[in-house]
Length: 103
Image 1: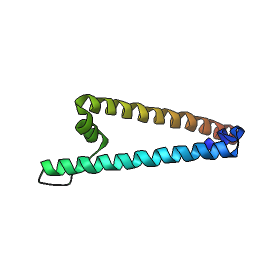
Image 2: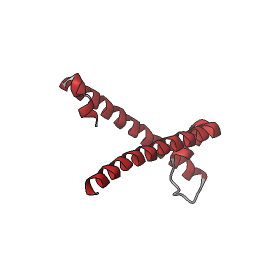
Image 3: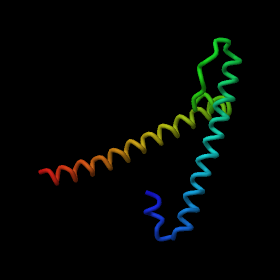
Image 4: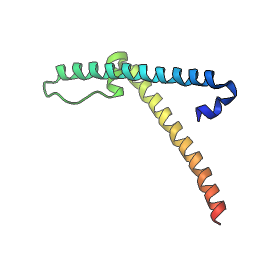
């Protein structure tokens, strides 16, 4: 993973890079949480039934309109497809390596 890839840079740059990634992840999670709360509040004010929650697509529709919702859906599709491809490729290598050892 990342620490093994950054070992050539040294300890301090690796720690700095990991810390920077952690801060970015933390801040974006807080922004996502705030957007989710806001979208949930707005949707519960529109519907007296309450509940419902707010997903990424409804948040992007409220903030960016229909084009933003389409863009978000497309980016999610791309991300999930890339994850499936990565898992399948690595899984295939692991299965191939296992079968070579067993057979």
